[in-house]
Length: 513
Image (cartoon, rainbow, N blue to C red; front, side, top):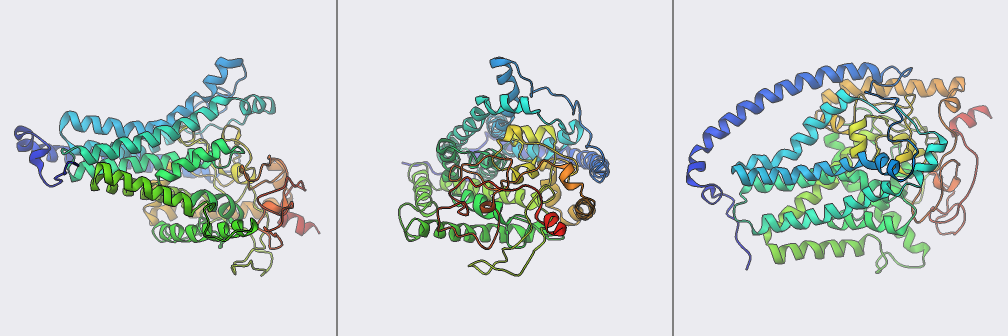
């Protein structure tokens, strides 16, 4: 029989002595947090002002401690391979803070400890990013070969998958069966695991792009436990095709508020994923509603997981699962908001696709995604912050992604930018000048021909196990063009073919004609 959790009964949470002194503890905690918040705000604002001035200067990289060091890129055999990949163990720190917060709660009886992940993730990490700065080093070709063959980088992504799944099951059982979990602790644990999962989406983002079913299925396994099964479909074949256009629900416009963007993105990304999957199934000669559907069938499995939590651990466990699942999607789309804010590709004609969306745009490139080399958050997020290289060369594994200051550059890493995005007036004050400058820089690069000199040639925006292609070439079928027939198994089909083509920038090429 399931134990009933009385969220409103403090008597079941603390002993009489602790309960009696709780108002005093709460008052002291409130004062301490108030002083800490003031100090954090002053430090964050000062550092952000400094880093914004650096982001506006495209002639030199943002500051970083040992930023040009090749440490963690060195060749040297098995030991060096292990060391090179070791920093990415930091991807487990957000999850570890959930366990630490719960342990502190059990030891002290103070449920506010369960919110530790929020304060660590959005308080400590932004400060560390600002103070430690960026890793500006790009691996050499020789180093790239060694790092590409280093399986320790793959180990860290797979390890996260199983740590996440075990954590979801553990905390579902914990909140469901532990009568000492009151309402404050419930929300602390649920939101903390959701935040840690939001940080973990850097891992899932990486492995859904990898060219093996083994990695692809690991990514989709996490999505099963996050009730987020459509994400990988829309991300690979929707977002990576429409990025930096009005047709992409995951690309925010200049002056668009995060709080209006997030709900549109959550809804339209699901609609886009269903449209893409419907086209995929029809290309296979099947209707949308069949057991092979890569959205519907996994969602049925997700609902089964949710039901198991409810049946064996109770209503509290189900509510926990729904909260952490929602926050996984929420923070993923928070990342989408900041990753392409205010960056737009030119529309070349009024052609539309079968859904009535404009589809004839200039080729996406290095100026259509925001970049940062901040070391701490890049280690935690599998270098997703070197985002321009990822969009231009989706086939490159995370350890090889490069950073170029000539790309639009954030003042700091994702954690700090997330915090800024929650306050639209401050966000616009910081980001709009940088976004407008990036637009002018891009126009100048195309005008004087420096674009092709600043960035490596090649474009392969779509890469996954369903389309096994490498980086370093332009592939017509992986662009958002109106003449692609997805029902045909040729080079224009986004699910088949290894087409090879020219490199460069479409708008630049057209101007030269």
